[in-house]
Image (spheres, rainbow, N blue to C red):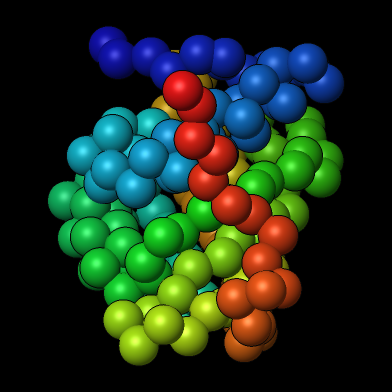
Length: 142
């Protein structure tokens, strides 16, 4: 059986780790890697889309990152219980015309005993921004 630590029941420390692991994975913009954090039959609501399963998650993420260029995400723990975590987040991206956006949202996550996510519900709002208003920039490490 595959596992994705930290496992529930969550403590403040392990919930924070789970959120950071998710942020790091999403910032890779690698649908294959990100999808491994979800159960084979994971249920998703993302804005107005409803779907389930890893293959549909991968397809969604491929579409998302083909449109949302130079995507950069920051997640923060909002609350947690035994097997659930809520996060607030914001991310920035631009389209192929060079217009920049910042998205604000909240997610509710429910986890299986093995630490894979069973349920993800996301509510997200976008605002148009100017490039000089960006908060998140990639840092180069030499």
